[in-house]
Image 1: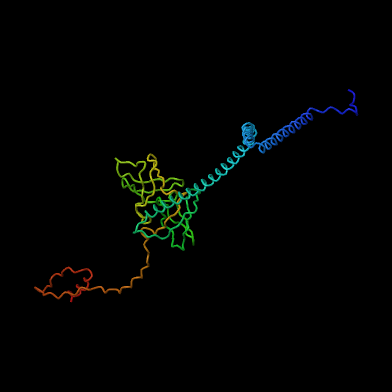
Image 2: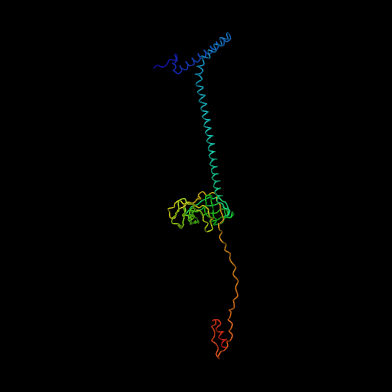
Length: 339
């Protein structure tokens, strides 16, 4: 292909021709619009009535064109409005979710407070005027190792707590104090392997011992008092008051396995959620041993002697036979008769 001549310009590309044609059409359209506007202005000055009719006809003719031309603009505006509405909806949704989460947190807190109030009411319901309350505390930790089930409460010597004091939770008996510090104490729970609590069955009145197993349950050891009745699942155990340590009538546990030997019971006071507890004085305090003063010595008593018998009359030149005398005064009596 021969190179283009310098004298003859190179042919324009299709894009360039299209751009030039569009520019020409735009200029022509602008010229027509400008000329028509000048014509309307001239008619308005020469004949106002005709100019008004021409403006109305022009508006009617251009209305569809204007509507078509405005359609993209309206579409863009609607899209922008939809995007703004979506953003507003998203922001409102986030705000509502935050308010819902806050309301749920408040409801959960209110539920916790309500449950705590119920637990405190139940705990106060176990109070009896004949029992002496020593201190109120909170069980802060529970430990389990090698058959031992113990808890730590926030009361100690400074609050009057001493060993062997019973500890009562909202659901029933929790255990007894074993070790005491200045501001805390250790409690042996009912399920501890060394725990022994005198109890009785509410339904039958049978007495026995609730013995800790070192796990999560207790054994109910008792003597069968009737051949026609048996321990049943659901029988409740309460303290009997025997032994003088635990007050009578405090809930202890419920039978969950009556076929085992001995029957198995579950403690009513959950060891892992004791919460607020009461420390009470022993039901019957142990007797105090008082050393008695030695008894004063007694003087020795003199041994009484039997008085000598009077000499008897001699009948026929011979003395009468001597009467029987006690062994202690035999010698003295013989001597008197001899004389």
